[in-house]
Length: 209
Image (cartoon, rainbow, N blue to C red):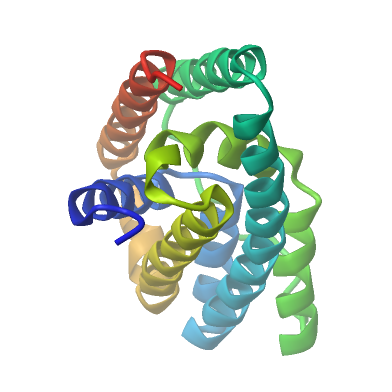
């Protein structure tokens, strides 16, 4: 097996927790589902995950090349990735609860919802940067082709995103009302996400080539 079962389990759990942390993508899924029903939220989710395929492919081939280039390149990637994850952790710890506004366009067709999901994801450089920081720490050069390992992890991340965002879409209306009524719930999710980011940063920085 290219990736050990325990690594897959840890990666999947981290992906689920990160998907639950309030952000522009899952908030958009939530608001569209609350406005137009679960089908709209599911369509947006499919669009976002389609965009993740593009990022996964680009990062997989790029990271594989960096890993194989030199020890200096690997160390640079490791430090930059760790610093970025620490930045995300700091932002998550400092994030305040916010009202999830739903004053968005109420006349979006299914095609436009799907396209918007794709565009939102592909045009967000933070997704690629996050993948560059997140995926490499779960691969092992001794276990075979890095590109295949990274593509596999990207697929697992997409599955986790489908499950989390799909659940948000199904629960859209009631979940939106609950999060608006419970600032404490938002803060707890942010703290969980911040802890995950910080732990991943520490793991990445201490990883040997």
